[in-house]
Amino acid sequence: MQKSFPRGERRGALLRFGAALIALAARPRLSLAQPVLNPEVGTDARMINTPEGAIRSIVKGAPMRRGRVKLELPKLAENGHSVALTVSVESPMTEQDHVRRIDLVSEKNPVPHMATFLLGARAGRAEIGTRVRLNGTQRMTAIAELSDGSFWFDTFDVTVTEAACLDGG
Amino acid sequence: MLRRGAKWAIALAFAACSASAGAQSRAIPASQLRSGETFVGADLRALQDDDLANPGMLWVDRGAELWSRAAGTSGKSCAGCHGEARQSMKGVAARYPAIDHASGELLNLENRINRCRIERQGAAALAYESEELLGLTTFIAHQSRGMIWSGKIDGAARAHFDAGREFYYRRHGQLNLACASCHEQNWGKRLGTETVSQGHSNGFPAYRMEWQTLGSLHRRLRACLFAIRAELPDYGSPTLVDLELFLAWRAQGLPIEAPAVRR
Amino acid sequence: MAVARIQLPPQAKRGEVIEVRIIVKHPMETGFRYDAYGRLTPRNVIRSLVCRYNGTVVFEGLLSSGIAANPYLRFFTRAVESGELEFSWIDDDKVTGKLSAPITVID
Image 1 (cartoon, rainbow over the protein chains, first blue to last red):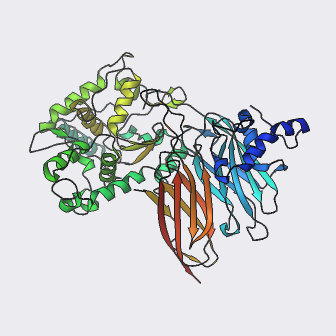
Image 2: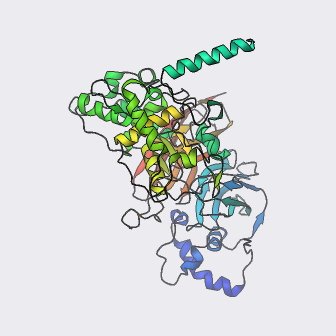
Image 3: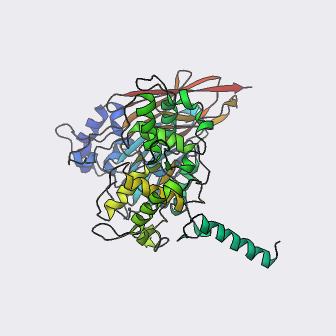
């Protein structure tokens, strides 16, 4: 399934989601990685707990360009409970030019904003490896924020197969 | 190179020895034995081979810590009697389940550990699938990693082996399937998106993705029986321990992989 | 009792970029699973995992239920000086964990 992530926003839509963004911005940083189960009155929960909402909460209206980021997972994951993921960003990782953070966004998971990794020049290399849960075949997105405030992204389509026997564990 | 006549003589002699030792014929010949590791994808295979990233190793660490911890009224730890597990436990998993000479019963690792705890340490038995029992069994089984099973199926173990074998080939449950129906007659074929494995036990205790945690062989066997809608024997029951003995013999030739990573 | 494993090179040249790997024993309970009685198992995931290099934060992971159970993380850091890499984490139940590993930096 193709999903395009909008860069610009129609003004009407931006105003509509403004309340959601303000609510998000007012939250402590930690909660960005958690599902917003009880949003404040006035926020549209459907937009927060969506991939688009997650991305908007990360880039906050700034443009996002494809490139410099490389996201890799197995093309075919035989079990969605634990899938290897590597994300790397081309960057000299100096004080003047480095990756500040990398975010992972899922298309199909109940919690679209999967993780945030905070780096910095001390990292030396902007590369993260982890294992993620995937709720079925979907497109994964990785977004990197650089020290100059720009956002770059990459996507990867993963096919996730189901177990043959529903054996109840 | 041996002359053809000599090779046949040796083969016949071997067969004669095997027959006299009461060896069973194997449904899957030794040359076709394949561990569960070969039926999972490259990602999970690499995970199993990576000692840092293999989640099962976390239970080996837990077991190592418990090994040295005093337990029960005795105030003794496993290490107090058995010393360094790396030496004393090497090869143990490779010959279990085994007959306990004192009681004459067939014990698997879990039952053996609990027997020790109750009788020697004055401690309570550990529950199946508890973090402690999983830690200790994984830690002990891990000391035999890479070794081939070399336990006994003759003598006092014979009746247990036969019972396990009979269970394996008997049909069970609502779906009326025997273990052999899938794992002997149809291994290598597809069931949904998966390839049916030979169903060997050499990787257990194993970290199973479906469980998102590590579990015992008995948990896996009960899961299989659940899948065919059969009655589930209790954890640690003689039924499952007998089956465990048969499975260990059936996998003979495959190295122990504990803790393995499986789907 | 925290159980975790850390791997990093025991020694490195000054300024060298080293790979650090950690796996932490934690169920990362999603909050979407039901128990045998049909009740929702409450969410309990590691929210934050921080790596401090001689006290300075060099890496932080803000995780969610989308990270697999027994979370595994691999990242890089510059070997600036000898000392200790200390990992600390906290989950939804406010249970914390800590583990350290030494690093020797040679010139």
